[in-house]
Image 1 (tube, rainbow, N blue to C red):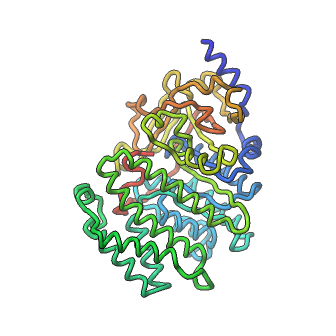
Image 2 (tube, rainbow, N blue to C red):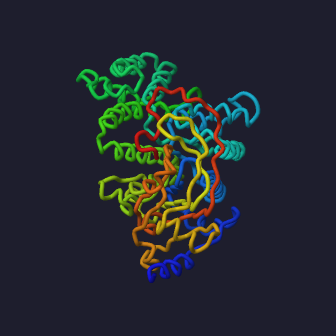
Image 3 (cartoon, rainbow, N blue to C red):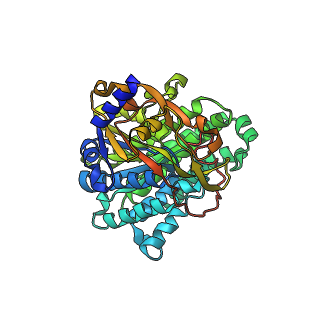
Length: 441
């Protein structure tokens, strides 16, 4: 019982009640000067995680000058959101019509991750906010994930066709190199396919071509040029990732994390034009938290949060996690199954969520001190709820990761009872592997 009473004292010492946007003041003060702020979520289908994440992001953009948002989503679909928030007039109809058109680009399962009313509200706000800013200062919205080989390759080919037609043949040759996979995820084809030496040379030539594009001008925006360069990198990275992922190679997790982290680093460099740009990441807790503070470290797995701390240092990185005791959630029974509302049972005994609920049923925000030894009881190892796109409420014990909470994050928001996300009804069309596969988060 001693450790529990220590936890009560430590939690109370660093807790703040949260009911409204203004209650975020202590967090904004702490996070506002960082180069990278990562904001998580314990599920992929909880309203409160998305809405609080948006509130934090809005304040960081308005008050602290953050330059872009990068999410755990596919680059091509997110780039349509980037186009919308910077130039809503390029989409037909009203501001909301344009937002809905852009969100319909999320046609890879699980579509509900970003095609939902909560994200709709945020991107409409961002589009309005950007209208007051000059082109070079508009806040962008980008994707970090690796699940878009064919869409990204097509985007790079189209860009070259429109700008340097003679160079488009290089991209088409790479397309032919990948053709045996035939734009599907047939496991046998991906595992048995081998890139020939000529194909490897074509890929190197392709990347070199994209790295030496002429500068952006009146006809070509800096965003579109960067989009083409990034699309090429994603296509090549995704081909390698699909192969090792479908083999069941344990390195697949780290390859994906490294790709997402490097994409964020590239975005930050792209936005640093005469000043140190600051960026925000939206992703699942499992990516946001520092993996060294969890059981992932025993499996030699790292996370975006860990890589960001390694890159910028603890003083320039801010990691924000979320948790909930019970409620409802949007998820699916199996891969590529339809999403549905599912019950979120009370958190398991002695999990972090159980501890917070036992202390008080009020929502609260923790700001961990720089010297974590001041809250040493929060460095103990306990279960932390982690629910992905695929969820089985009857197997609740499997949905926890063992973590030292105070080292995992810099701040933690506990929402005692949560409700479901409001997803759009979009039928998956993409032939890419389902996003988050095979990890669910």
